[in-house]
Image 1 (cartoon, rainbow, N blue to C red):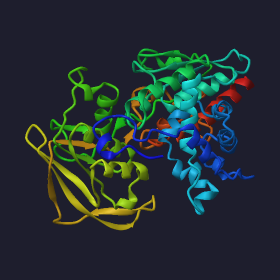
Image 2 (tube, rainbow, N blue to C red):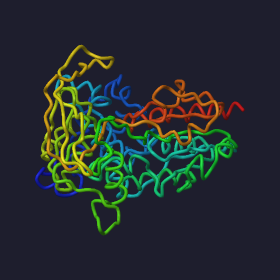
Image 3 (cartoon, rainbow, N blue to C red):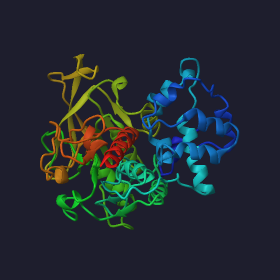
Image 4 (cartoon, helix red, strand yellow):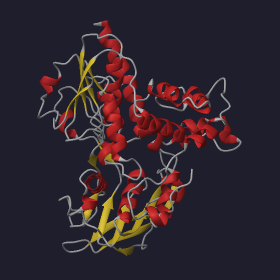
Length: 447
């Protein structure tokens, strides 16, 4: 697939790639070797039968391919766009060592888009068990658990604090990577399975913890929406944003269309973004589309960037300057941001992640002129609900402690996704949610 020209796409929020045509999808699917022991399936956190759906695409049986995918994944259009396939299914493809791996993610996206255009269907549900499960949070983990539990025959009520479902899929990922109409369509498919959703319900407030515990089981999927900050001087200045706030204002609250929508965001002439993950790349690329000159500052080397390679490549093509081996130490200004002071970093011995530990170089500070500073250095679970559940064990970083099946320290309460693991990928949240949903099902059937 060819991307749209960078000079064109940097001025809009349309998708970077138009996706496969039917002929292109069939041609790509024909490359699949249909391995007897497909490693690609082992690389998929939700265990889609990848060879089976690709075989149907090669034959032009797109409807059958959709049925196969949705037996294991009710968010295929989302996953086809934002999953890090290069380190998962495609990374395990046997062709990756000889030539290009099969573009599994692009094929999944094609099938999801084709089905949406030609009429969708949902998997058959098992007979009702009579049990009622509360799912808190409608991001990827909550939607996955709700769909799986409903498919297994349980009644599901999904509680969402915001006015629209989707969680981080709606407010955290830019339109040009994940169009909101795609998210809405896949949410509708989950609801079509009989899931009841209650919007504008803040668990712990609109519905209390004792009320939640009246359900037969509770699944926590409240994500990691509490931003981390560097703790450097000047963070209180006007023009300093967390990436969470910046992306939410633009993605979910239409700040890019101010004053049509009354949600302003500062459109800096020179923006500095701190961080190196996908969220940092998203923030930098959104700022570019708002007309800013953008410098992304990352404390390690370029090869250590945790963001997907495609996202780094797209950011560079769109004019984002990536400054590596540097770290902000102060935001400059009196009431508003006028600059960001940084220091050069040198690489030392590897840390627990295997990457070199970064250490400041004495006397190496320098200043980048800026009128806006965005911090994208991570986020953790919002403590509002989980701090009110008595006996709920939590780790040092505030995330909920769970076992391998998503069980928490409180009976009948399960958790998965970012609230349990800390900030991770969409597909890992979905995979852990699917595991927890099946554990809930086993528990309820043993009652």
